[in-house]
Amino acid sequence: MVKAKLFIEFKGLDVESGVEKFLDKLSGDFDQLSIKSKRECTCANGITIESQHQVELGQTIIIINIPKCISGENTGIPGVLNSLFYMSVFSFISKFYILEIDLPDSILATYSGPRFGIDGIRNTSGVLERPILGLILKPRMALNVEAVPLTIKTALSSGIDYIVDDELNTNSNCQPIQNRMSVIQSAIDEYNKEHGTNKFFIANAVAEQEQAIEIIETGLKYNVKGYLLNTITQGFSSAKHIIDYFDGRAFFIINNIGKGIVNRMSDFHVSDAVYCKLNRMIGADGVYTGPSQTDYAFNEAQLDTVLQAMQGDFAHIKESMLVSSGAITTRDIVQNHEELGDDCMLQLGRGLLNSKIGFQKACIKVYSITEAISSSTQRRKVEKNHHMKKESFTKSISQGRISDINSNIYKEYQIIKQLEDQLRLENRVIESEQIKENISQCRIRIEQALLEIDDIKQREQLSEVEHNFWNEDKNKILDYAINNVDKYLSDKEAESLASEILAVLSRIDTKPDMSSIPRFKIESTKAQATNPELNAKDKLKITIPIVPYIFRYEKELSLDMKFSLKHVWSSLINKFK
Figure 1: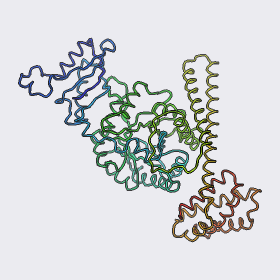
Figure 2: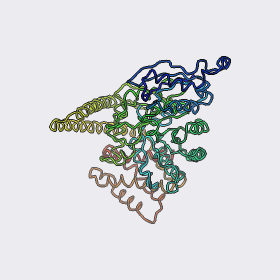
Figure 3: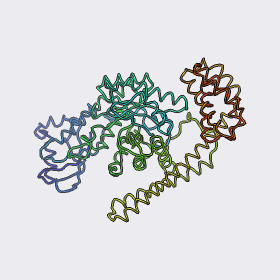
Figure 4: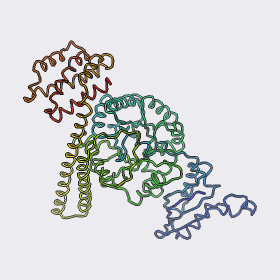
């Protein structure tokens, strides 16, 4: 038996009369059946009301039991929705909301649910605690695919965990998805190989069923791990078929384009909680539930039902990620994080790309904010996979300081939230200006705190670099590298490494305290490596021998030069190990 919680407003009828008429219409001619027919019918006594609560005059919330023979139990979600939607057609009903549904085991057993779920996506990304951060590629029209790799590299190196297609950018003549997937995934793969990370791409597969399958098959060949679907436009059955077809070979996020028509507060709608629960049933590893913005916050009671539908106990079905996507800015991150919790995916587009503080700084800020909130609050913690890399250095002192800073950042954001609430209610100009000034001061303190965290983390990385890389037998590695440039490196990779070595060398050449590096060595290397007649690999062979000279003076190197040298050295080790 299917159970549903409904809100109904009756037109020109009190609640008692309205409910009686409602049941009479739903039961149809049941009362006119013969005694034998009633006995043989599995509907028992037909549709029954389990509980009823009057909200206002003519309005009621009822929990209704729908018998198997008309609930669509044998036909899954389509049959259930068909039965529930029929209840809204009567002319004496002016408002009809499907608030919740409770499905029997006979239906749930036919749905596998998410193959990845929360833990699977976390293991895929390597992000085990905080929200997973995504960049939506913009503009959706006339996207310059050739320029995308630079944007991707900047985003991924600044704390973003994945790249996702714009919801409207599927497959068109001017934006063929095969080319887009190839370019984007290649840029991500290159970054992952260089940095040992697990960044990923989510491609848009909202299309006719067979075309969507073709898109995903092509994407898997390029190593694309995630795909967008839409159950409002594609249908629950079609999306389920696609998810079942790939059965764990990819993960799937359901976007909510069309939600404004189907789920938003109108006279006839399905609640977000019901929509999320059905998507979780068919196998959605994540479902769009946002965005939450200062002027468009979640209703707390509704959000609780959505959280329960997505991450509450639900038979054998895994928990799904909540996804907040769209017009989010750095100012909205705290609100989204606090309302959705750690187990969510936050996707930003123009909020990062068009940020007033600059794209890279905006990415770093979003990452730092989520780190701070996750570190300073007690939230659900996913058990770490034992295959993940373990930190080899004790960082108790610096980690303790970072924890203190994170707690302060969190407190500052709580103050901002209170001040913004006051500002909305304040009509006096002087008082409003003072509140704005107080908010501004809070934001300045947050920026300073984030800078301090960044500085601590940079110094941690450098101590790790010095321990892991700078104690190696450098001459052996460099000799091996010189002898194997032609074998292991492409022209593009050789050119990139040679350019980085020369860049470090040029900065050293301008520092008086570094003059003890043989002048002839610097000048000779620069002169030979800039010879236009040499190919990229020969240039690299010339520049590699200068690296040991730079290492001799690593104690005197500035912070930015140390990071440049670290990148060169780690690249050499990764390429030739």
